[in-house]
Length: 362
Ligand SMILES: Cc1ncc(COP(=O)(O)O)c(C=O)c1O
Image (cartoon, rainbow, N blue to C red; front, side, top):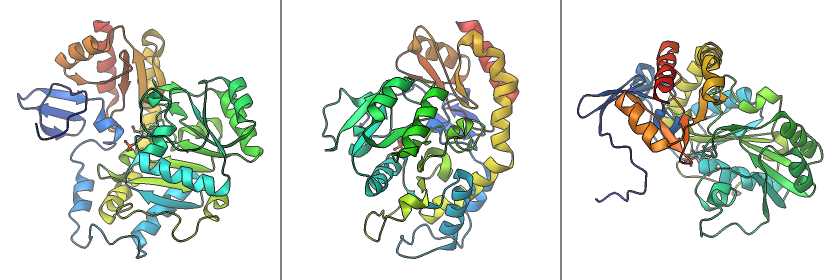
């Protein structure tokens, strides 16, 4: 094999894709509940995305040396949607968190708090803040990083006393689809009032997936910096760091940069994606939780909100094999957690049928 294959492959060769479905080379049709790991918000072959990509006027790349109205427009949209003042574009989630850490550091250098079970990316800064990699032997950033027990407000208050920066996921994704409790949000507000810079990693939970544009809004929490990625670029690499003026005002020319970040093709798709999130899909995600997920939540032990969902099974691999036979693709994390990040266009009947199939299997 020429490709460095360091992924836990799913034994299906994909031939075609349409809407929420993937079709294998043996013509088996699967409802895709992984959604390209949360990227394919609009499903596959969205016509408006394809139309936007075929716009002959658009050039893929001009670099950030030039100002461009499209970049300004999407930054403005994100500032409005996130309640922020300035937005910087990147190519990925991990790059957004790297930038966020540097931007936060400029305002307040010092001890960084992250959480047990966290996942913020695989480049060395984000890696250093990711508790899931605590056992991996790679270099780490040279600043104190302390991990707080998940959903333990007392531990957060204790370790937060001398913290300069805190980064957290409102709903941990790779850490098991675990929702942060209100008591921890209250302590985060206290720490923020005392001057700590709070970064909310909404790379998985943001963009309306939970029924609100940012999952932290459910707790009326207003971070200093928000990071986004995944589906923002409609399948093209695009991330964003939205920040308060307090953070942005410290940054000057040369402090940070990216050659490809915010390339025009990805921004062209972001315009389509954001328009659809605002005009219906975000509400759909809230409604599908209320109308479908709630019917199964207790019985299956479902965690998460909107369309960021997870539940535990006894044997993840066996479950994934069985449900795949029945035409569903799911993502297994931490051996026995089934994680669902479906496209926002999934219909209520489709999700209900999936959960009924789960009931039959377990
Ligand atoms: C919460 C969170 N942060 C950061 C990342 C890293 O994003 P990327 O893989 O685009 O670098 C991910 C990816 O799954 C994520 O879920």
